[in-house]
Length: 198
Ligand SMILES: Cc1cc2nc3c(=O)[nH]c(=O)nc-3n(C[C@H](O)[C@H](O)[C@H](O)COP(=O)(O)O)c2cc1C
Image 1 (cartoon, helix red, strand yellow):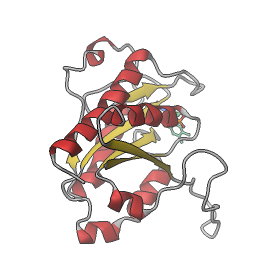
Image 2 (cartoon, protein in one colour):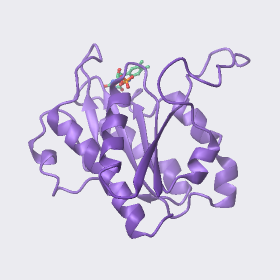
Image 3 (cartoon, protein in one colour):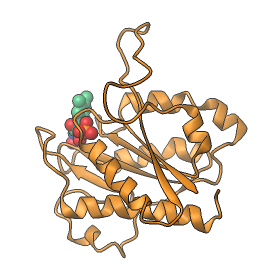
Image 4 (cartoon, helix red, strand yellow):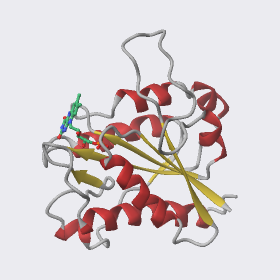
């Protein structure tokens, strides 16, 4: 069984909804299963710690989740054209995996949600790829054979799925956005299978 880690941070729920669509795409591929994980918010008070188990939603990720996965889908809301601090904070804790080369050769993709259509989806997606490249992961985007890339009037990019959540961050995922999320999950899972990951 290939386990694909779907790891995200979400404050208002849009990136969380994208993660669910990606997980469904993963699980369309035989012998592939999604492991959904999130990260806690970071605090302005350094000493403050969060409960180990969130009140609701998926568990918080540990480095073991990264170590054990065959592939990774990494998602974040856009914050000033970049990924959100809680996700960056978790990634910054992964030096031991970098030193051991634990993620080298594993397929990965990225996804994001913004408020506005031109609010930095592509910059966020590209910046999320940087630490994954340092880890030696194999980055996957979305090919234009996914027809929704050409028909979408909201999110969806060749760098990865995206969502335009609106100024109140409440707009639901469009049909095209959902399809592209599912396509990324399926593509990561199929690549893990083709690589013979266990
Ligand atoms: C500090 C901060 C910075 C943000 N920066 C951007 C931005 O650069 N572009 C944009 O379109 N939306 C921006 N937003 C809006 C979020 O991207 C939007 O609320 C997000 O898509 C919601 O995702 P979520 O429901 O998963 O939390 C920002 C929000 C916050 C709180």
